[in-house]
Amino acid sequence: MDMIDSILLVDDENLFHLVFEDACSLLDITLNLMAIDNADAAENHFANLVKENKPKPDCIFVDLNIIGSSFDGIELCRRINFVHGDGVVIGIISSSDDETEQAKAVKAGAQFWIIKSDEIEPRLEEFVKDFEGYKERTASFKVYR
Amino acid sequence: MIVLNDEIKKELIQLASEKNIFLEGNITKLIDTESDLDFRNYIFQCISRDKESRKKRLDITKTIQQQNKELTEWKAHNEQLNSELKLALETSEKAKQLAESDLDVLQKRTQNELVGSIVKVALWIICGVGAITSILFAITLLTDIENKTVESSWSNMFSILLTNSFSIVGTIMGVKYANNRNNGRDGGGCKYKK
Image (cartoon, rainbow over all chains, first blue to last red; front, side, top):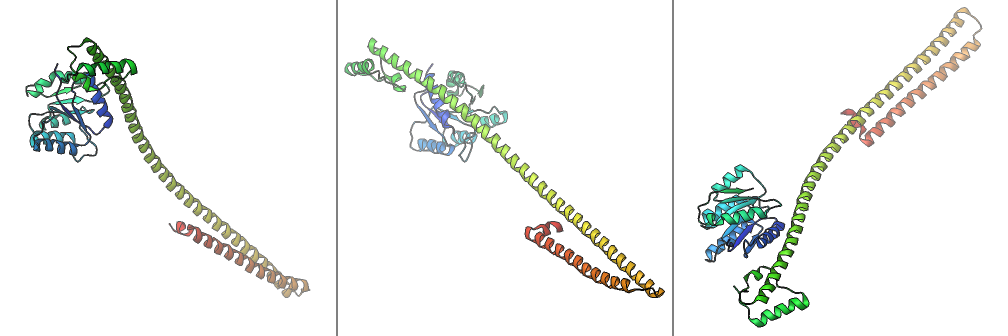
């Protein structure tokens, strides 16, 4: 199983950054992880990458409710998908399993939804197996419970 | 992959065996170990140690995350309880004020009724004694009986009744004035009006 070259995590909870980083390292998901705790900062970062023609992350994990930001994770998905970039695998990572929000996320261009809980590692392992499908745009929207 | 020369490899292995210091982090996954068996073992050891410490850190972080979550929930619950308590306190305070006001009104009514009864009884006694002595004095005048004692008793009685009447009226007025002053000072007068 190939590693994902680079991942961007957008989540307001700094403790989850550590959990995600350790899980990615232990499961050999990626060696290049960047974590941002604010949706506005993430959008600016992505816009700068596009503007300066720098390599974009292969995959972006966005939290649903990013406290301290002027918009939520679904809006960030929409902006990255339809305003700043294309071809980036992007999805939501949240403790919520709300189907209405999931439908909104699909409309915003999210390709997956990972339920955040204590045991996140098995879901990440399953996600990595499906990653190629997301990258090729052949896999349909999936919720990892 | 990063290819290290033999000298650096030896130094790293020596550092690990002598001082128990190992490479750690994701860099260990990027070092080429194909040609050297000892160095491959060394890197394998580095990766195992790194995984071990990451597992520990992950467990601790998850525990802290869980505690944080519980603490946040507890805080929200506590805030809700506090607001409910505050509301209950405000309600009980209002009820207490209302009860105090009712009690005050009741006390004043009882006092007024008592004062009224005392005044009534006092007036009856005054009028009764005055009437009886006057009738006695009239009888002695009409019947020409010796009336020195009755005459002096009547005048004494009337003077006593007169002074006592003023004294009673003065006392009642004084008590009423004192009550009004007290009510005005503690706001009771306003409560009474409500």
